[in-house]
Image (cartoon, rainbow, N blue to C red):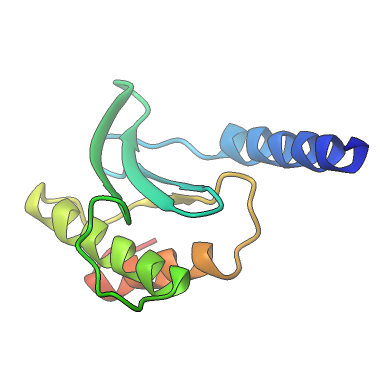
Length: 119
């Protein structure tokens, strides 16, 4: 139990350290990623106004019967890029939320790049 608490505290500390250096504007919003055990969420945030411009998650997407979490994350990234282009957003700043750039986080980022977002 103590190890889980320590791990969570370290992740939150990393998240705050990363977020202190990253700031999203209306022209170049922040692509924020949240990963739970079962789902992954991504949203484009304008930090100047405090608004979420675009959001997507694997909960809202219609997916095939047999799809892995990593494939779902890539699909969320592509969907996010498609919605961003509809709002004429082409460049973003990536905020991994204190998580390692690996696995589902990397798959979401690669999916967004495939969709045409630049970061």
